[in-house]
Length: 104
Image 1 (cartoon, helix red, strand yellow):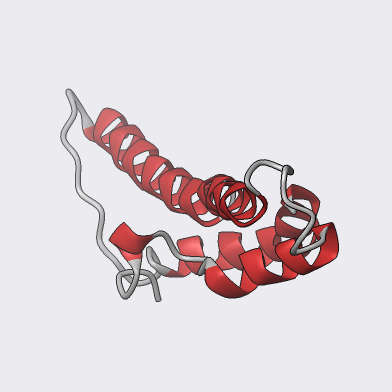
Image 2 (tube, rainbow, N blue to C red):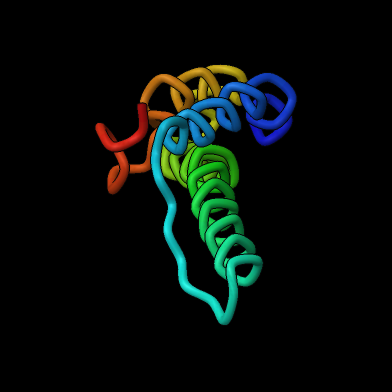
């Protein structure tokens, strides 16, 4: 499941996280203009990284948790592995509950 998230979804996740910052003004303070610029870029970068991780690592973790719930940590024979993976992706949305609707 993690392979699918990172190999097939990571680019879309990065674009979605970056889109949130497009057209926005980021402000920060500093001892001089360069320090303020550096702080603003750092803040924007940290927000981008948080959103990207929510959409990839966070989603991968939630998918694994859902899979474990469906299979009782592999103890159940039904659903089989492929079906449990399919159901996990079907039941667990990409966006974490706390950001649904916030990300573009």
